[in-house]
Image (cartoon, rainbow, N blue to C red; front, side, top):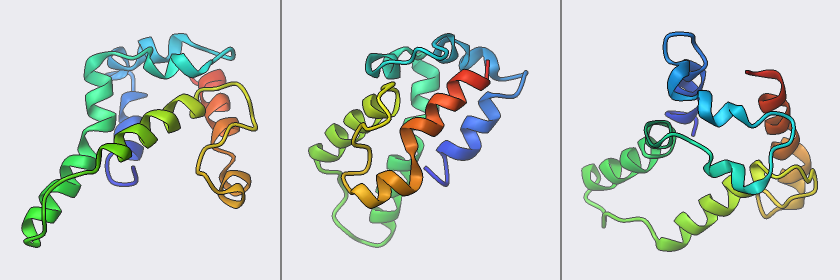
Length: 116
């Protein structure tokens, strides 16, 4: 997320690229879990494929077994759903301290409400 999602998400909010991300922001202050999937295919690929691809390339470069466990995909899907839930008590990081520290759900709700 630090390498791909953060910079690319900021780029998608620039006027030149926003048309790829506009559909996702049609959901404003009333975001719900399923709105995580209210997204263009290109936007989904840009924001969610880069980091796993980098991981697989790194594994290969280091001579490690290349792969990602299927449960990681499930956790990431659950995370995206919880991130878009309007419930500020949604479990985000499966650690109460991290949930309290990062306030992922609350901050993402503000992102949707303030960025059109």
